[in-house]
Image 1 (cartoon, rainbow, N blue to C red):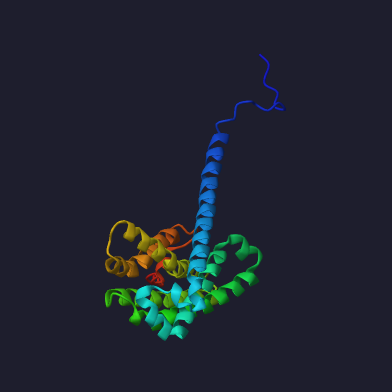
Image 2: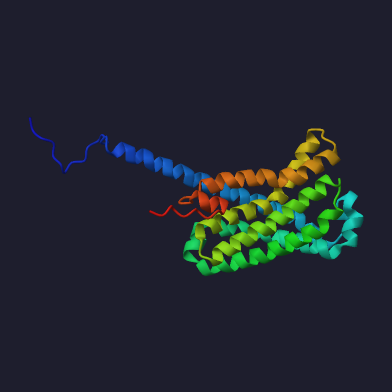
Length: 245
């Protein structure tokens, strides 16, 4: 019986090749899922910015009926909050593109600085506007918490970046943008609650909390899946020194 010619490829893949094929498929699927997730978030961010930017016209007809008088009386705080929020939600998705970070680090840093300035404006305006919100004190406290956490997480992302602590920088950046995306979650939650027959005051009071708590839960899930991220980078704690000897 003649031995098979090694120069002729076999029609049946070898057993050793099968695991590599399955592994390649598993790698490809998360890649497609990440791209689909990025496009979905970017589309939501764009639509939210488009919808919210109407407030920058200061046209009373576009304001929420229950808040029209408050918005007209505090135009400066409103423009600061909405203008910063629109810019932050438009810039945020691009900071999570690996190609931008890898090939254009200078552009990544520039967009990051603009994002931080936008967050500073949005958070400051939010702190000024929150006490004048509807359905007090539940909703104002919820929106105040959102503004405080947005400013804090963004500051921690900036500090980690300055220290070249890239893993912790990414973790805090994810949290920061998740809080920015609360603007989109809010505008999904309220119509859904309205369709479910929930009274507006009740829906608004819960939305003031759920719009960012839901996003933070999703953010922590994504952070846990970041490659190479140790537990200390997720929590911000410094590991204890090993015992001497």
